[in-house]
Structure formats: C-alpha cells, structure tokens
Length: 136
Image 1 (cartoon, one colour):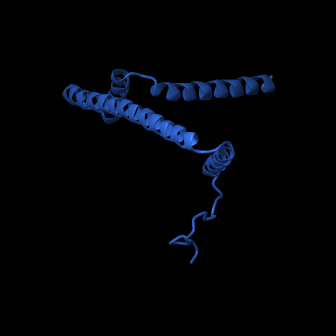
Image 2 (tube, rainbow, N blue to C red):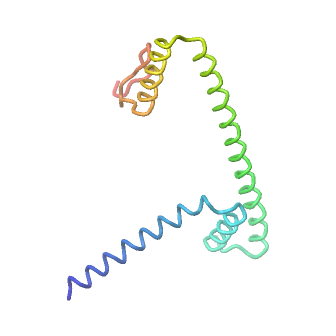
Image 3 (cartoon, rainbow, N blue to C red):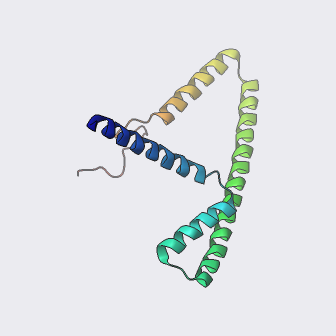
C-alpha cells in the first residue's frame, strides 16, 4: 500500500512538472495582448495594485509587449535579408572558383562551422594570447 501511494505521488509530481514546463514554453507563443494581460495579472497579484495602478501598468506592459514583437519581426526580416546577401556572395564566389577550389572552399566552411559549434573550453584559437588569464 505504501508503495502504491509513493508511486502515485511520484507520478503526480512528474505530471505537474511537465505541465509547468509546457506553460512556460507557450508563453512565447502568446500574442502581445495575452502576454501583457498575464504580466499585468501577475504584477497585480504580487504587488497588490489598485485598479488605477493596474490600468496604468496594463497600458505600459502592452506597449512594451507590442514593441518587443515589432523588434523581433524586424530582426527576423533583417536576418533573412543578411542570409540572402551571404548566399548571393557565396554563389558569386562559387562562379569564380574551379571545381577543385570549390571542394577546398566547402571543406573550409564545414570545418569553420564545426569549430564555431563546438569551441574548446579554455583554449584560445586566435593568433594572439588572451588579454586576461584566470588565476594570475
């Protein structure tokens, strides 16, 4: 009987943890208005805001949420434009190179991407020594 109760408690804790993670993940998917409303409600609850304060905070939080959303969209557009420009430049370079040079170029790009994705900790890959060293 004790094992059954313990098992039920463990399953309950796991399910609550998973649902909490799911709620945090969905916060990013909410619209600016929904995020502002949640933030206002949380602030009102934690800070015991008056109705007037709640309305003022709601306006500011909504303004902030819509601005953040606009900035995110602008960054996405800029990122895509930069990506297209880089692809155009790579295509122009590829048109200049021979097949052998293209293979070397592709290998170089792949090794560079691999190094960027997995930097070694504590090692310096540049030509100069780091300016500051720990423990000295």
